[in-house]
Amino acid sequence: MVIKMKKINFKEKIKSDDFDYCFGKPRIEMAGQECLVDGLQSILEYTDTKIIVSLGTKIITFFGDGLHINSFTREGAIVEGNIISMEFSE
Image (cartoon, rainbow, N blue to C red; front, side, top):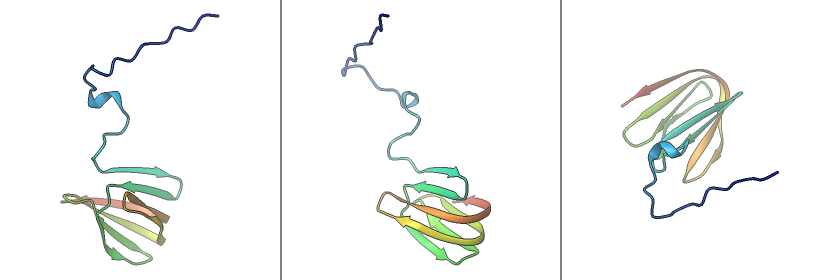
């Protein structure tokens, strides 16, 4: 069995569609009862039924039951709980 490997030329221009994730841009990812929010700048409101976070130019409002932030770093946060809906605004 022969496996051919592509040689990487670092001088080639990297296109943004070469990656699943665009660096420097906000990103959210849902899995079960968790929502990963990258690019988080601040938490505007925090209750067990509503969490509002700012991503700079965008604001995300989480509505649900038993909401809490499980992890918070300078890169982002993980919102957990029974997330019923999310609202996006500027």
